[in-house]
Image 1 (cartoon, rainbow, N blue to C red):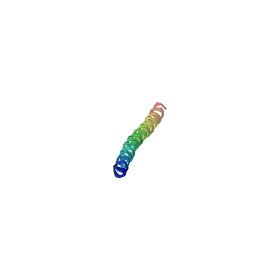
Image 2: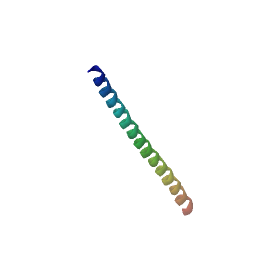
Image 3: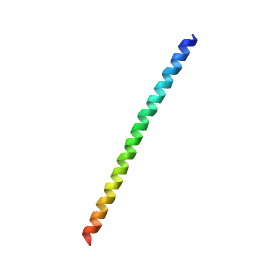
Image 4: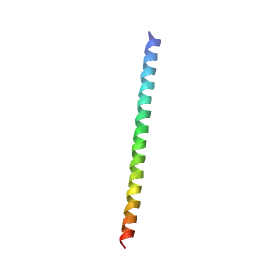
Amino acid sequence: MIHLSVAIGRFFEALFFAILKVAGAIAGSVVGIALVGAILFWVARMLIVRGKR
């Protein structure tokens, strides 16, 4: 019976870490996309300001 509880505990631990890994990858990609968007917005703004002169 002890072996079964250890196996169940390890299963839920692996499941928990897999969920954290996926959530971390999603959060990292969202932050990366937001950073790229901010840089593109800044570059476009600089080009527009430069064109008005």
